[in-house]
Figure (spheres, rainbow, N blue to C red):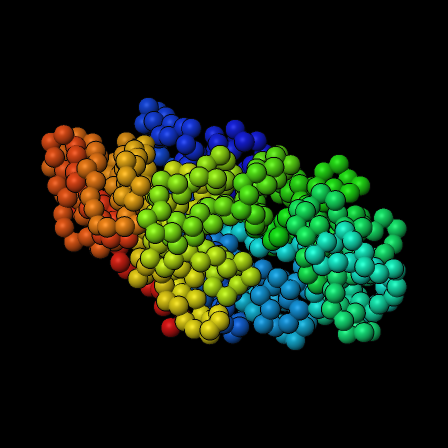
Length: 547
């Protein structure tokens, strides 16, 4: 499935308004045009992150994905973000400890042929199946560093303060750094080897067995200047930090992009830790912008790109989008923090959820989410969104217009691990897949808000000429309640019921197009015509992925 391009903000709007939402400034505009022209209303798209941090290291993940694909397609998953498929520093590595960009589970290196997720052959089977089903694949690209070096090399460094990485706390001296990458198990795709001069920093001295942040010394060696200023400079993240001022690094990584996209038939990329990766140094443009432009030129099409820039300051995110000429989308980190705040604050104002979020000001460059592998329990960026609020949060990202929603593996299949080591079942009693399906089938047309009360809100999606059913959504973060909402005189006499099954009663639409829609305490209900096409598909998703 082809993914949208991001060459210009307006071009992006024109191409994908029907897929990802047209934004608060243009509610219903795309659907109105579709009705006037009698053109088919484009389907809503949903992305799925198909992994969580604690997926078992049994090398069967690609097999599980292959088996799950037909059912994921049925509920309305259109694009899948797969984990880093490159060889990690150890067989159980999730891929963020990346060793070799060009080994997708094909060569005997670092203790195994396959990655934690499986072999390249199995991954190619997944790619073929997604192509058959018209599901797009997004690759998780880890470009900031390398890990699991094949040898150490004597390297001149300066030790820097971990809390202010611009401040040296030693003079230059030699360490034995693990920065030699020969890739002895691989003899094709790229002949580039890596040595100390391809890196800007590392984190371990083999000679003294000391872990610290060492800035590598040499001509034109320094941390990148156009990165986030967290802790003085965020250029060094972990392991051996690649130096994109070196032309061989730039060339090798730029060559990898089109290669892996063609090898797997990719539709897009998720870029890891981009607040540590955007570099200008001796170039007029950031490397990632150069990477994406090269990718688009070599592939002859625009490529979907989403970046992990995990800052809860909206201004930081919008500034980054400006630097990238809006060729990128970003995960809406402020939105996840807003979900945490509202879910943890008794009687918080539900109307404030979007305040300060990226989606509020850049809806067509925003990927909305509730949780991911970094924010899930026991992870470094853990953000505690209360369990009871998870379905409400999904209603916000799936059933409104703005943003491109990304659903998390852990919310539909559960989380298998953490501290304490426990199993967390699917969120919302297994109802998240039904919410994705409701988006695919019914969340179309104008959006009419009912936001008179802070703890009881609702909205109606009015449908379009060729997707006429629409839906009515009610949320409460306090007592049970009900809202009288208008769904249209075209629905008079109809009976609507809650697809979640949490409200057992029926809503009868009156002659003037109004209905009284109830919701339970701290809950969400999603009402649709009782006999609307597709109602028979709900409640059938198999979330037993490990069975």
